[in-house]
Image (cartoon, rainbow, N blue to C red; front, side):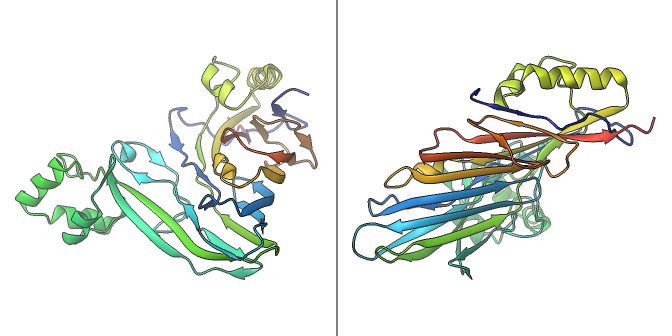
Amino acid sequence: MKAHALLIAATLLAGLPGVASANDSSAQLAAGGLVLTRSDAIEMRSEDLRISRSEVVVRYTFLNTSGKDVTSRVAFPLPPIGGPYFFESDVSIPVSDSDNFLGFTTRVDGKPVTMEMEQKAMTGTVDRTAWLRSNGIPLTPESEVAGGALDRLSAARHAEAVRLKLIEENGDPSWSLHTTYHWVQRFPAGVPVVVEHRYKPSVGGTVMTMLGEEKDPETEKRYCVEPSLLAGLRRTAKAGRVVYSENWLDYILVTGGNWKAPIGQFKLTVDKEQPGDLVSFCGDGVRKISPTRFEVTHTNWRPTQNLSILFLVRNERTQ
């Protein structure tokens, strides 16, 4: 079997109500799994990862094999938001008006976990959180409240913020906000601990794909798009009845390598949700298990690269 998967719907017979510019796109933010302080005591016995455009659900089973109880801090870092040029593109934020902008929740052995939150406002590698707080500016750069507070800065403070690279000359925020949810977890000796978290992914996209009509080696390589999919898209475009829009979703897998041993049993399920849609991603041994779901399994596995998924959404032309 090839070292990647081309996952195509059974038919290419749908379409789109109107077509906008192919440049009308939004960017995705890459999130991932839990980060545990490196430990020689704790093994990840299994990871069950389910990904769709609607939700990401991850279920881990950990086992402390050291012979004595271990307490460790477990963290979930949200992808950074903000920074230079962030507001020049449309970035997908699933849950607006919330610090928890992915709607992240966690359960341990079936019970909800109360988490702490750490936030840092960074300009490059410099932490400017204290400056923003001392000047009454909220840390979330895209919020209206933060924008109003920046507008009220004195001329001297405005100049200082520009010098510190917190804002552009025109007053636009340029810091990036790094948010991490974390909690302290006890791992009893020899007792499996099941941790499940779920969140709404940041899904980028564009209203019409040009794959098949124009060469795009970077996209084809990133998502392991096979020639047969490109040929199908060309046939569909030629028929004129169907167009496809693109959705992109990234998941950080490499944090799964931060364990005493490789992941014992790993399962990835990608759900395209609609049978007529298409999906392509890189993976070994992909199996189709339903009209919309595809599965990858590994034993004693350490991920060496992150996951990028391309969804091609079938739409019906009205013109």
